[in-house]
Length: 573
Image 1: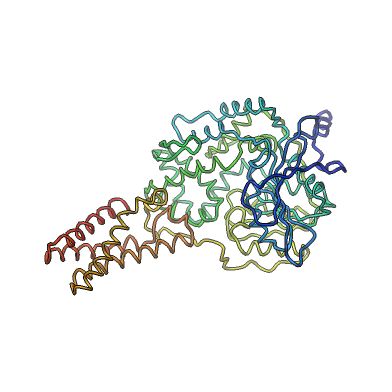
Image 2: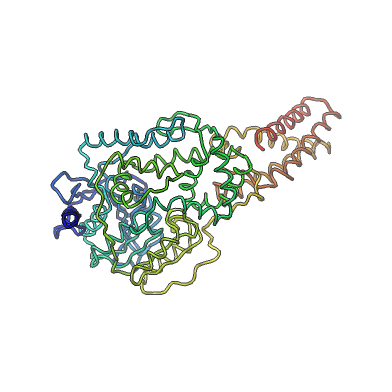
């Protein structure tokens, strides 16, 4: 036991860097950033506990031009692990207009060098939707072998080293102190930074807190179950999972890595996995009641956007970095005594079994600066059930929940306001939560929705809406011609068609403007009800006009109306 303790101490990474600031080098900004922003790389050792090569950590600094510019900036890091940060520089500069904003990448991430991408692992994860499923552990082994050939030492990519990079960047940029802002995984990083560099930290904001004390993988299934129950669709979710486990659905989708279409086979457990990831987003959480309800009623067409979401998620992370961190800092601290239904949980375990990276020594960091912890009341990853007690364990920390999901500062105007007020005066007590929060999309209920997969398909290929556009155009011509020539039946046919097109367009646009993701579930209920009967009336009147005058304009109008109804009833609805 004594030998183990000595080894752990010897291998632990010091977070505070030497007195001499590490070098930085300027570089073009790889993403769109606001004016008065410069980008660069922080040059740091790949491993601080042993001699080796130097790597580059990307960062951006936006300088505030406000008259009352404060001396201590905000420093932000994305979550993940392996989520990027630089793309939020402009968003954060608006959130904190009187402070400089520093965004720092994680070592090995998309805008750092080297980039620890693992397309082999990503392709195998997507292969979980094929039959037979791909071997994720074997794919990860091939990725590690390739990275090792490139000189990458995965042992240097963990939370301790990432936290040490944040401390080193403060010293390199010459800021006496700053305010830390972490979200999801990077809350763990920022807590370590605050404990290791107390003289350089004025305040700490932790959004969607993921403390070391939480066994995330062991909790993952429960967190998902609690979230769907909170959304009011627990029973419907169970029916969906059970039904698709008995009879998996075949869903057309596209492989984003190879750019080729393929047919995914989705079981109930696959759908649960995709929802566990998708419910991080507030827009998906808002439509979940209608989405899960529609799936429970047998609308398998709603699986298409879920299958597409798997591919989109696989290109948003660098899986070499992600698994390097998880295999050292998270997986070893979980028991995995019960097999998860989530293939991402089982895949991460398989990768870590294949990589056999050393287990990190726990830090149990306790920040000394004022800490403000915020979270969403429907967060499937870092729920208040675990984040709240962890926040209470930090002396003097404040914890507040907001209506929303993961990373509430991105969607909740109230959360942003309270965070900004805390940074302005960390010792001041914030006001009560804002209700209602204008930044949150409204909840979409099944009773208010006509479920159909057509709008989503049209969003992918707009030409599929051509029959609707043609019907609207023909109706407009009918209305004008009938009114000018005094032909009431023709005019009323056109008026009904134009009214249908206008009402439908207004309803769909209104839904999309509130939450574009809602179109992946369907259209407002009146579109499939009353508005459809207005279109039927238009087509019937066009046929009636044809009986009075059988010239070609009336033939075209009648054929267009009949053809539109066939398309509408057999494809769209």
